[in-house]
Length: 537
Ligand code: TNX
View (cartoon, rainbow, N blue to C red):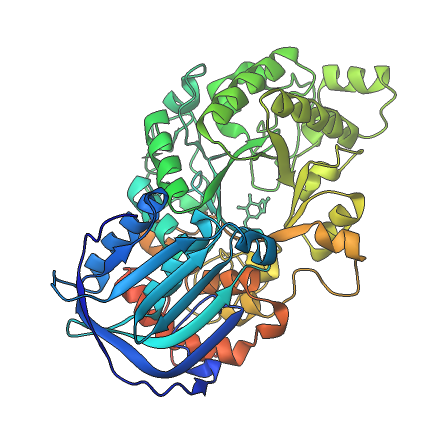
């Protein structure tokens, strides 16, 4: 057992224990699955005296830091304890991520089967505490909690706008506070390549810059300086050292990072850095959906697979995640139709439609990732043109139907559907910025849905819905403050959809809790959106 390092004074205020309704819950988001508040509070000044096994040092350390920062606690010689125990048998009844938390007149107890469970218990504890001029109080509480979905994700696009290490760490902290456990990092796109690849240095030397004096043009949505035909220069990338630091930071917070390298489309940053990766062309092609030509890789050029093998090898060495995301969305197949060697290849292999070329490419990537001991994941378009290995993960963004289709086909499926999960869509209100192709996404829209769409899937198919993920694409998100604004409180809703059982969720009740929860977000410096008085949500 670890010896007590910090002390705190506790004065239990009431011994009467009456169950209260969950609306009395201070601010807990996501709502625990079994929660019982009782009459009375544990109040204390000073720091926590923690007893815990050594194997929990990392979780205890993070808790102590948070307590110091947020509860403004000062050393104190009186004792009330926070006892933390690991009990592996809980795994059988409650699962890996479950925890129990109890606050009573004698102190605080946290129990779980794993470090992850204890970590979540500490996050609930931090939300439970109220600080009043140096006195911290916790309601007498009994919680037994475990998540509905294993995959509770949040995606950030840093290709369109680069937010930087400090913001990512802040975001990981805020995710952890909401028990979100997958950070999907969209690191490459047409407008920028944001990760150092040692074998292909031009990807960042050339590909991480756009605008004036660079080779990647400023996109229309980013032409801030109208007098400059190229727009201002815009740059940013992470070194492999930065990445290692961020991966470790996430790991300590029980978050897995899912890296995304978007191919074969959305690849202007690659094709600009290494033009030989492009198909040769004998016809003019239309611009793709996002206004670019020449942003699709050749899929018949063998050297491109060597390049991707090397890139994904470096990615696999940096990120310990089970899956690696390869993008695969919105490929402008006209680039292949206009290419003599692609037409020849199709003829030779009896292919009728260029989507079959896309399928061939995906099958090659599945193999490359397997070689690096990883499993492929991609946007729902990866299913076009043929079958894939059943263990390949599909992230459904374009529609619910695409997600249901993926689950029926046997793929592990993540629901990331626009109308509920795309937080680059506008909030309600005239002055809000953002896309609107998936509609206005209010916090209520982010909350009121059921990711398994009851009645549409049989039991086996339902099990393939591994969870949900919200996404922040950043064409219209210029900086970290705006990223926070667009994410929160909508991602609070995502966290509860992902964590709390459908039968326990209720919008009005969530909305009531959210008011108080915003105070908590203040304590962790989240620049969330405050609903204007005129807006409904
Ligand atoms: C679609 S979702 C895209 C992104 C855009 C986003 C804007 C997906 C896989 N592709 O490239 O940024 O819409 O909402």
